Length: 147
Image (cartoon, rainbow, N blue to C red; front, side, top):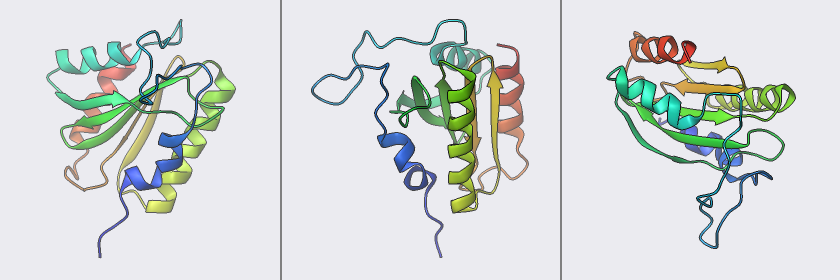
């Protein structure tokens, strides 16, 4: 029996409407979408992972749920589903982390971690059990914690 995908469990997370990010008629964020000042930006996280040879793939804008993150991107790192989000406040960050953990509980995620660097989070889950040792998530976490 196949488990529901993380994308399905996080559908409410991906379909929400953030107040701080504008959208054009296609639903994609405007190129003027603002990152949150004073916290690592998603592009900085991705660059750090690339520099560490972690090869992030297919990262693109992911619309955060209402009243949580301001800006998010979702993709994979060595097959591990990963979401990076920037938050305006500690309260919004706490709500976002709780929603994420609730989603993981609903799908019985095998290995997942959510880490914080200032008001940016890295959430990684190995839903396909591609890496039972957790080596990739550990490497990602080490790089992320230095930002």
